[in-house]
Image (cartoon, rainbow, N blue to C red):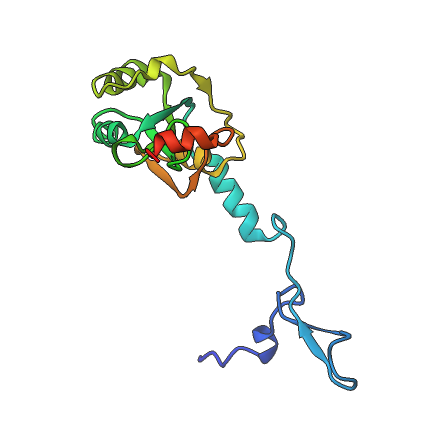
Length: 186
């Protein structure tokens, strides 16, 4: 006994598919019809629900964060310690017009150092060995529900990350004309 082809009705998409539907639109010439995609709101589609289920099942590390301004030359030395010691860094470069930064060797960045409590002593020692007093910066627990993308990436990552913003930032109130002249030897 052989089975014939499936009936054509089985090949039709279900009524709930995301096929474009006809809709009346003011920018379409009279007598014409437009197809407009019906897109479900985020979180309602089955793929969204599955993604959120998987995300919630992933382990998220409980982290501490310390923030400080550091010379870029010291930052390069500290980054070399990553991997040997488990910590992550988020970095924002400072403009040469910032009070804590400058040109060349004086260039600096604002960094946030993330680590788990169990690694705190090792992280503090790693920064101390390159001449940075990380212990002077206050340790703040990282909110597991943080809306900051870099914090979420670091908490979900099993590895040490170095995340650097491509933009340059100016720290604090602008320097006075006299301070700028003195800095740039004008």
